[in-house]
Length: 86
Image (tube, rainbow, N blue to C red; front, side, top):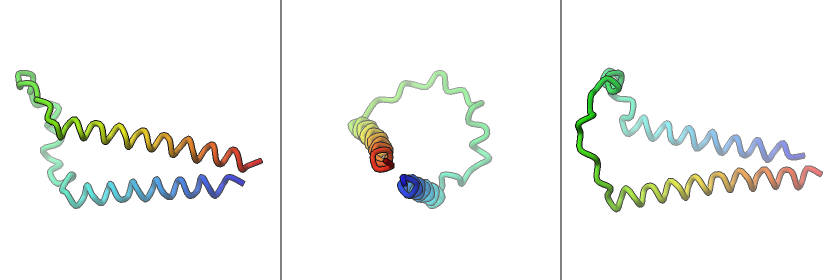
């Protein structure tokens, strides 16, 4: 019976998604929708390139670690469910 493991996995995923959505609402990510629709039309082709900062590199490494941990957790849940379903 591996069904409860997948239900728990889905509940954790939904909880993380809801937490991210609440964070976005509290930080005003959806505040100015009128401006957002014009962003693709803005011409920033002549803008200078953005310089990488140490914080930006740390952020990229952190995102890579989180993505790797998520894939590892997914593989672990799948392997655990397949192993104990016999």
